[in-house]
Length: 224
Image (tube, rainbow, N blue to C red; front, side, top):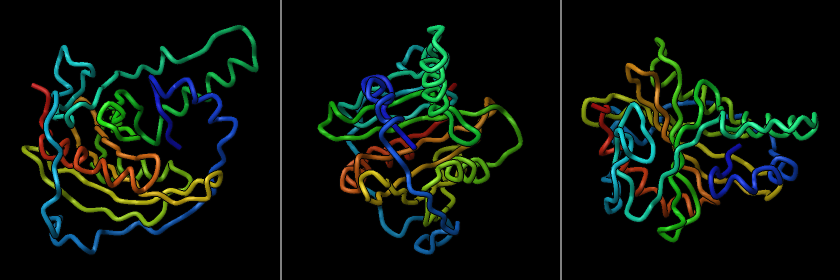
């Protein structure tokens, strides 16, 4: 379940109350269209905007990468989202909202908004604690925590000094009665795993934003 943070956070409480998700299950597998972890065709890459991840940028991360032109980043801090009003019911809703910032082994730390570029969706960055888990294991945990995920197709990729794992899958909304495409990748760093996820309002918006995901993947570097 994924919602906007920052500009999208104001609608999150309503989404928690109004949105239901249909449970789904799908067998995980390797992408048959990628021999040796290489895409079968050259992916389109978006025009470059600002770089994100380094000290002093909007989101300080264990990795750096280029954002698509006009996209805007905002750091996400789960502690800042916690509500403490003294009202048990209101605080329970606040705790539920904070829980939405966690998915499997990782927590959302950065949200990059496509709206300034005329698209509806986000590129989100999630990080986890240092450990021995490899990128695929982290990514399987991330996708597995999404109740309606199905049709997972994993493949290995390399970008600079990183060897990571990418996944394509779908999720289903019971409220909208629609299935949409999702994409995510994971890499390991000394500071812990990093997951970059691209959703979108629907499959059409998702596919329109894929060049931004490809740009992030192709420019991915360890933060120096």
